[in-house]
Length: 261
Length: 368
Image 1 (cartoon, chains in turn blue, green):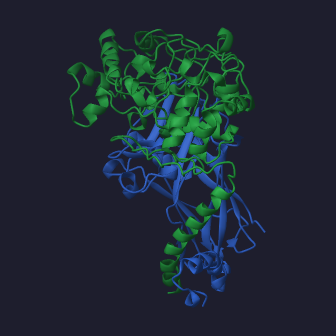
Image 2 (image 1 turned 180 degrees about the vertical axis):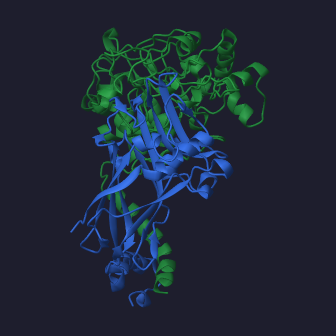
Image 3 (image 1 turned 120 degrees about the vertical axis):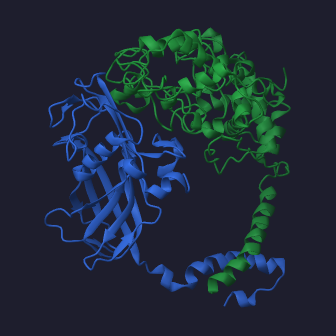
């Protein structure tokens, strides 16, 4: 309406620019009514029932002593499912969690259509396609300490530390690999905590998901191992897959949810 | 549909309103009108990663960089007029000073050595402990630190304002001849961002302009990961060739120089976290042959001593990066290199020396 009155003279254009910009915001009332909300993720890294602290001594369920000096992982392709089976997937969904960086352990997923969701699914690591193509920004920036290279892709999960049972006294696990036999990409679906029937996302409700990642489940699971057997993983190989099978089987759990009312 | 119409109209409108904003500006600077500075674009050299985001409020300009260069070599910025940034950051040594630990005004010794300055537009971690992530903020530290240049920026601004040349130079770079602390820091940061080193023999080999010798290539191979079948010194974990041979962003390492208690808390002094004690930034290996002595306190005189450390003398502590004692290069997990392997690695490190960079007239003292 405003635009019809515009002439081509510079003065009018300038006036129009200022008014026009504001007009755009007010013009379309439907864009002012939000239809999507947010979901907050909080990752807490633990060792069994203890919280994880770098340098502290812990014991694996197989009885190996260990400390942790680095623990990073990539969470990607977050998907929320509804009771009717339909789902919403976060676009460009890549998040890097680093134990050393407290701010990285909390992140927000926005643009979630208002609804009730009953299931949470995500990938630990980076989907095959994105390992070798696409924008390398944010969680996928090559300077995040989680990148091997153009042909070998990303490190999905990295844990380092010491263990008395390791022949060298240390361990360095860099798990990645997205092709063929040595594909370590794993997707997990986590049940909602007992007593929580759905995640209700609305204009007034932003649920906060509190997830726990238990590093003991790296050593224990379908392919349990001792630090005397595996202490060094630096490429996509059978040991990397072994660790991926373990951590996909039970490292992550949705501990509790704050409804965010 | 409405959007298409508005968008098409808004493009010329936005340009026109930008003109209006620019047109308003000279009215504020009543003392003198300065022409807008000339924008400068920093090119990304071949093989370099993506540049860190340039601060929106301090874009590079020809006038800003020229002013920053003047300030970099300006001794008036020190309390006794004897020290400039260029005193400890000498171009001939890739902007280091050849000393184990830097000397400030009155010959006071800093706890740490001067770091090389190069390719700073690609970095977000400055100084040995990463205390600053923005160049504009970092530059204040050496200017005001009692053991460095020891003069408050406010005093420096007063001194510069009284000169015959600086008010006009600030006007040309920032639109106002009234000098501010912020604009001193901005100009210094602009000059520093232009210190690009990308013409070493290694870079030339990357561009297929020349090839490295067999020994140098073997040295390059030896920088990498060891496997059961390939020898490797594991250098690239912390000095990633894809990241200009520096460490990952915001990542610090204890490289086994000492055991606790650490004389220098390193990163732990910034974070207050005990586990970060004795951890430091992994500096770029570019121009490393020019920047002796080595480590944050300059304890190693030569690259041979550095290699001996990583090979044979790494001290174990809870803070140590486990990659230094968990290499398949030796059954013990130590890096354990032969004398010949060390020589080959050092031969490769010399290919990272950029003789163009250390003689580039754009980076030298404008008033020697």
